[in-house]
Image 1: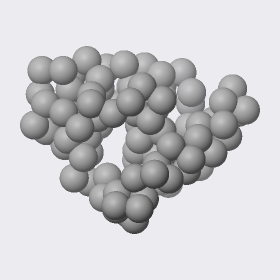
Image 2 (image 1 turned 120 degrees about the horizontal axis):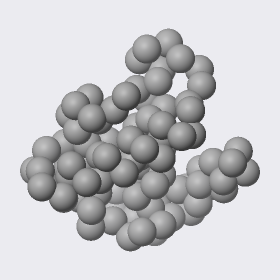
Image 3 (image 1 turned 90 degrees about the vertical axis):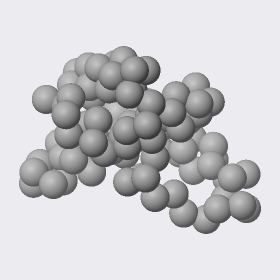
Image 4 (image 1 turned 45 degrees about the vertical axis):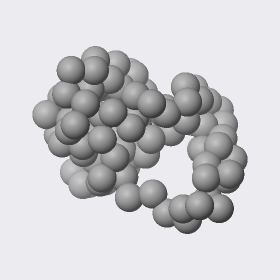
Length: 97
Protein backbone atom coordinates (compact mmCIF):
# COMPACT_ATOMS: atom_id res chain seq x y z
CA UNK A 1 0.00 0.00 0.00
CA UNK A 2 2.87 2.41 0.71
CA UNK A 3 3.92 2.14 -2.92
CA UNK A 4 0.46 3.32 -3.90
CA UNK A 5 0.74 6.38 -1.65
CA UNK A 6 4.16 7.24 -3.07
CA UNK A 7 2.90 6.77 -6.61
CA UNK A 8 -0.10 8.94 -5.81
CA UNK A 9 2.10 11.74 -4.47
CA UNK A 10 4.26 11.67 -7.59
CA UNK A 11 1.25 11.55 -9.87
CA UNK A 12 -0.28 14.48 -7.99
CA UNK A 13 2.68 16.62 -8.89
CA UNK A 14 2.59 15.44 -12.48
CA UNK A 15 -1.21 15.64 -12.70
CA UNK A 16 -1.29 19.27 -11.69
CA UNK A 17 1.74 20.29 -13.76
CA UNK A 18 -0.28 21.58 -16.74
CA UNK A 19 -2.63 23.46 -14.41
CA UNK A 20 0.36 25.00 -12.67
CA UNK A 21 0.90 27.28 -15.65
CA UNK A 22 -2.42 28.95 -14.92
CA UNK A 23 -2.40 28.62 -11.12
CA UNK A 24 0.69 27.91 -9.05
CA UNK A 25 -1.03 27.07 -5.76
CA UNK A 26 -4.28 25.40 -4.83
CA UNK A 27 -6.04 26.58 -1.70
CA UNK A 28 -7.54 23.33 -0.50
CA UNK A 29 -9.62 25.13 2.11
CA UNK A 30 -11.69 26.59 -0.74
CA UNK A 31 -12.24 23.48 -2.86
CA UNK A 32 -15.92 22.52 -2.92
CA UNK A 33 -17.56 19.16 -3.30
CA UNK A 34 -18.63 20.16 -6.79
CA UNK A 35 -15.02 20.84 -7.77
CA UNK A 36 -13.87 17.53 -6.29
CA UNK A 37 -16.55 15.60 -8.15
CA UNK A 38 -15.56 17.31 -11.42
CA UNK A 39 -11.85 16.45 -11.11
CA UNK A 40 -10.47 13.77 -13.41
CA UNK A 41 -10.60 10.37 -11.71
CA UNK A 42 -6.82 10.23 -11.37
CA UNK A 43 -6.58 13.56 -9.48
CA UNK A 44 -9.33 13.34 -6.84
CA UNK A 45 -7.57 10.72 -4.66
CA UNK A 46 -4.59 13.02 -4.21
CA UNK A 47 -6.75 15.80 -2.84
CA UNK A 48 -8.45 13.46 -0.37
CA UNK A 49 -5.11 11.94 0.67
CA UNK A 50 -3.65 15.40 1.30
CA UNK A 51 -6.69 16.37 3.36
CA UNK A 52 -6.40 13.16 5.40
CA UNK A 53 -2.80 14.02 6.19
CA UNK A 54 -3.75 17.57 7.08
CA UNK A 55 -6.41 16.47 9.54
CA UNK A 56 -4.09 13.84 11.02
CA UNK A 57 -1.50 16.50 11.70
CA UNK A 58 -4.11 18.69 13.43
CA UNK A 59 -4.56 15.90 15.98
CA UNK A 60 -0.81 15.29 16.30
CA UNK A 61 -0.97 11.90 14.60
CA UNK A 62 1.92 10.94 12.41
CA UNK A 63 0.15 7.97 10.85
CA UNK A 64 -2.76 7.45 8.50
CA UNK A 65 -4.76 4.25 8.69
CA UNK A 66 -5.35 3.36 5.05
CA UNK A 67 -8.56 1.50 5.92
CA UNK A 68 -10.03 4.71 7.30
CA UNK A 69 -8.65 6.74 4.41
CA UNK A 70 -10.57 4.54 1.97
CA UNK A 71 -13.69 4.57 4.14
CA UNK A 72 -13.60 8.32 4.72
CA UNK A 73 -13.00 8.98 1.03
CA UNK A 74 -16.08 6.96 0.11
CA UNK A 75 -18.26 8.50 2.83
CA UNK A 76 -17.07 12.00 1.96
CA UNK A 77 -17.62 11.48 -1.76
CA UNK A 78 -21.12 10.13 -1.14
CA UNK A 79 -21.88 13.14 1.09
CA UNK A 80 -20.52 15.52 -1.55
CA UNK A 81 -22.94 14.20 -4.15
CA UNK A 82 -25.81 15.82 -2.24
CA UNK A 83 -23.93 18.79 -0.74
CA UNK A 84 -22.07 20.14 -3.77
CA UNK A 85 -21.57 23.69 -2.46
CA UNK A 86 -19.84 22.68 0.79
CA UNK A 87 -16.07 22.83 1.09
CA UNK A 88 -14.11 19.62 1.44
CA UNK A 89 -12.71 20.83 4.75
CA UNK A 90 -16.19 21.08 6.25
CA UNK A 91 -17.22 17.72 4.79
CA UNK A 92 -14.23 15.97 6.32
CA UNK A 93 -14.87 17.57 9.69
CA UNK A 94 -18.45 16.24 9.54
CA UNK A 95 -17.82 12.75 8.18
CA UNK A 96 -14.28 11.60 9.08
CA UNK A 97 -13.66 9.09 11.85
